[in-house]
Amino acid sequence: MGGYTAFFYGTLMAREILYRVCYGTSKVDDFPALKELASELSIQPALLHNYCRHKVADADYPAVIPQLGHTVRGTYVTGLTDTDVTHLDRFEGSEYTRKKVKVMILEDGQEKGESVEAQTYVWSAPVARLEREEWDYDEFRREKMHRWTDASEEYEGKQSLNIYLENGVSGAHDPTGGRAFAADLDVNDTQEEMLHAAA
Image 1 (cartoon, one colour):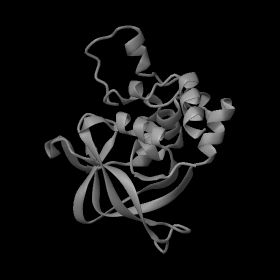
Image 2 (cartoon, helix red, strand yellow):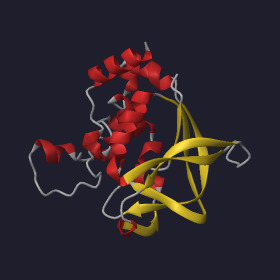
Image 3 (cartoon, rainbow, N blue to C red):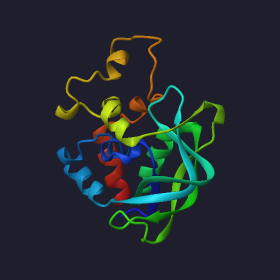
Image 4 (cartoon, rainbow, N blue to C red):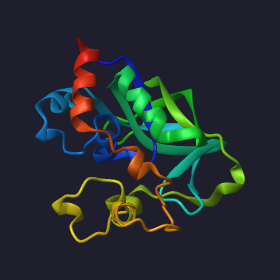
């Protein structure tokens, strides 16, 4: 089991995307070694106080910045490995800085859990790129997540950004900021790399 903990407040709240970033596929059940690694993760709802989650202009994903009196709901994840964190850092890119924060674990939907330390990705690009409006996770899942996940029956009929890449369409706006493609790891290489790291 990995020793890293993280607080995710945006696209990575979706297990499908977290698995795709860390393991190269959202369908970990199809790969016994990846399924075992994914089972090591513990995911719980949590709150991050004194930060605010904003929409990033022309993007599907959000950003958090410090803001007194605001609270961000997200997920607290334990069991992340060095390899997972490397993949997460690459996925988040230069727009974010990984920082230690304190989050409050939610129990039964109530803020009565313990306060724990975790790492999260805080916006470090120009604040002018953030919209005033807060980012909505439910809206993301409903309207935009199909651009971020592997093809599946759940997203059948939704057009993937990979179509633009495969057909060489240039100038197409990418609301994932390249992250839909950055998360595409070779599953076999990922399994081998993770099994080696676990040995």
